[in-house]
Image (cartoon, rainbow, N blue to C red; front, side, top):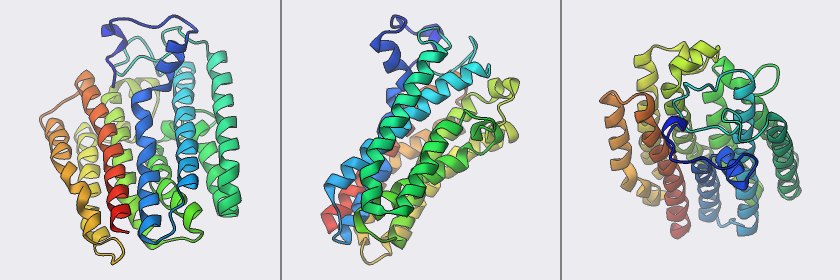
Amino acid sequence: MSAPASSAPSLPRAGSFGAWWLASRPRTLPAALAPIAAGTGVAAVEGRARLGLAALCFATALLLQLAANLANDVFDFERGTDSGARLGPPRAAQLGLLSPRALRLGLASVLAAATLSGVGLVAAGGWPILLAGALALLAAWGYTGGPWPLAYHGLGDVAVFAFFGVVGVAGSHFVQAGEPSLLALAASVPIGALATAILALNNLRDREGDARAGKRTLAVRSSERAARIWPIALLALAFAALPALASAPQAGVAALFPLVLAPEALAIAGSLRAGASGEALNPLLARTARLTALFGVALGAALWAAA
């Protein structure tokens, strides 16, 4: 993650492309690749991978992630969650770089683009993909927006696991294969766990500020110790799931390839155990987002190579 606003060397001009780039939170976007890569890898070992549809899945996932980031920027600002005491990366609305109206228009445009991108997926996958897509659009907006925002009621972790894990992996596989797969569902567990670990680190960092703003995340509802253990447990789950995945005949030992990334997960967990907090969690967030993307690509590529 980028440095907090107070230590940022420079900021873009209000209304500029740089302001929109900041609002997009580009360091979070590669994580959208992980579920699509994993789902495509499962489709490949089944002999059903379709790269055109995989690319369309990734485009849609990227747009949904971008929409969620814009929604977080504007809705957290309007609810008073983002303030000058913010420990995370700078937000466009908070700094006056983009008006809430501009961000709302941008959000609507990105959601419209995601809808158009999803039309091809619905054509390929039918009503299950239509339902999943509609829920994903609603979640991207309703994560911090709407009358009952998920993130403000402790359901952010559930939403991230569901949409980055089950929907992202199993959904991208379903679009290509045309039918559900237990292997795809199993592959969704480590991807969902890593994506949720990103959120858990974010919520651990913002725990005190969120509590003051009335944002009742899982970290706020838990003790500080539990909030610190939670991302470590999620990292452990992601790697512990690999042997079970490898036990499936179609996957085999190829599913163990992401274990090469275990040292990075251990290093992140070690920093958490050592008490990293506040702004010191920003680099760990960036590393966990990168780990998530690399894990998904490693799993997908290994399964593809084994096909």
